[in-house]
Length: 156
Image (tube, rainbow, N blue to C red; front, side, top):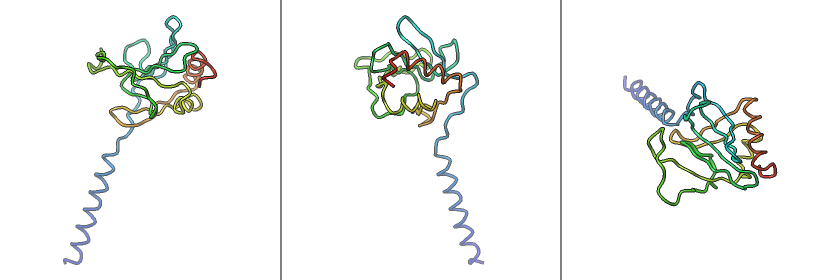
């Protein structure tokens, strides 16, 4: 009887460990309904945001002005680049939506993460949920092209 019980208990233990390790790997969050890429202009500044259209519900927003070599990034997620520059050296502003601190960073428009985003329509980002991709539809990719052309075609 012990010849069968010991291997069975060992097999159950291995299955439990495998299930537990698989559960700790973060799955990318599902895209919420109505979320997508949107482009707007405010004076000479272009704003490319991922969130709900015509609302303050944004996961990420990038801004740039023509001729600048950096884009400013705001939001709950940030591009997955080791070359992000934290812009805030003083007190950080409070995010009106989440109540937490609003993180502001800068990223070079020629950064490999942004070049890949321009080329493929998929932006690797990191946030509380871990690392995942924000993808763009064919129509949204046109907006991404316009944003980077506005920032400077030779930049990205």
